[in-house]
Image (cartoon, rainbow, N blue to C red; front, top):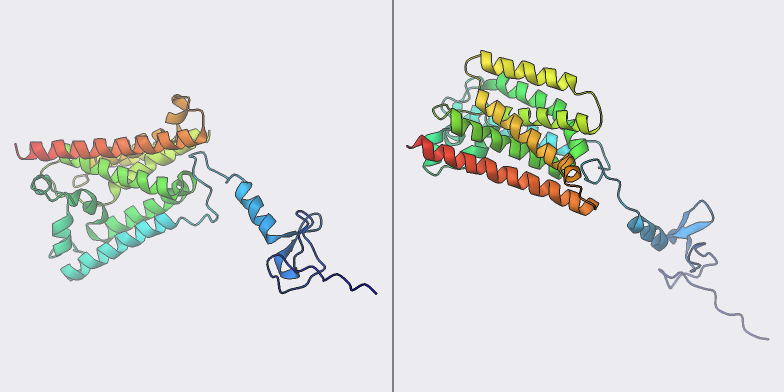
Length: 290
């Protein structure tokens, strides 16, 4: 009597005899290593191979589509602004007049002569300061409304890059044209998001009229009311608009052939704008001491 051949064992668990097999690759697999498929059952190795071979879904900006629609970068930016406001309020011992008596506010507020003397951190740091809770809440509400959609389309890294470039653009506008002012607030970056959303709507072939009206109203208010950083708003608006144009439209204008090259063009355009904004800040610093 011939002995029976040994039962096959799972390729991933050699100590487990099994009578099952992957209907795709044919290898014996235990029940733990198999998943139901449209026809039969596939082993986890075949499923992983399929996942690697499928190209990721991308947005019009070339960013990989997020698995969740939660705008985590927008939430993080809002949290940072709130945290810094809390620090300045605690230092000033006043929720309403946080700018008075706060060492952090004094060290970060944008003032051209201070930047000219080497305090370059003010160029970015001032974008996270606010004059009082109303200023803070208005900016954070606007950032939430426009930021969540911009983040979804641009992708988290591109969105953050456009936000920071908008902030730099706002600081450049102040450094060039409002050198005697003490400027603070996320308004320049928020205006940049206004411009970004407008470009996104045009790229998606949606009607941008509502955003254009909103931008017009806000620019009119900036012209009309004293104490509002007009040049910070206009600089941020210009930088955010140009950065988003570079991401969404410039590759097409240059007739770039591959998606990889298109993404590279977008990143290079954002980097060039950031360098240009810093160059304008430098010009403002030089002229403020002349």
